[in-house]
Image 1 (cartoon, rainbow, N blue to C red):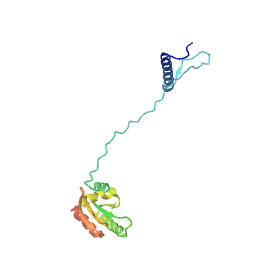
Image 2 (cartoon, rainbow, N blue to C red):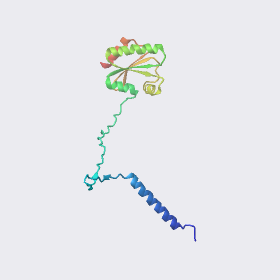
Image 3 (cartoon, rainbow, N blue to C red):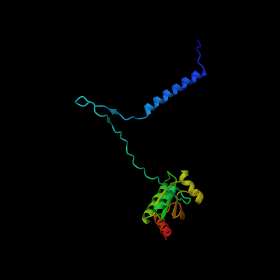
Image 4 (tube, one colour):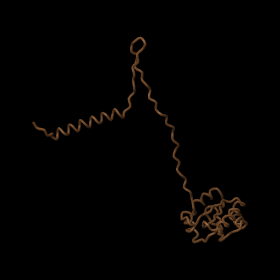
Amino acid sequence: MNTTLSTQHVRLLVLAALLAVCGLAYFVVVPRNSTTKTESPAGTTATPTVTPRVTPSVTPAKPATRPVKLATHGMPIKVARALQKHRVVVVVLYAPGSTLDEMARAESQAGARNEGAGFVRLNVFRQKEGNPILHKLGVVDTPAVLVVSRPGHVYAELPGVADRRIVAQAVADARG
């Protein structure tokens, strides 16, 4: 008796195994309606009861809105966002940890508040904030106060500590 399987026999066994796996997967994956037979009190069988399948309701998704690209006009993102809300924005360039820079920030913020202008402070040690200003104006020493009007036009550059009245006057001039 021959104990080895021929290639035809191997192919037939693989095909049978594949059909068995597909049949099993079909019964596992495909849901079936459950039907039950119930006995009535008189002993006769009633009609089969079909349990309804509940499908979850899907709420329609909101239409995808495309994000509006912010026109920065060569300014950092913070300044561009402030210019969307205010016609004139006071920008302070500062180095963290410097008391002189903190004094410049406080004075320029008070001047911007008095005139109702926007206010943004930019850390020059952060490349993401400092690079656009560097490209637009060149090297600027800290502290520095910039008065920026729409659309990203630097109206005044005030080096060093600027008094709140000077900042308020520069904001008023930028509006005029």
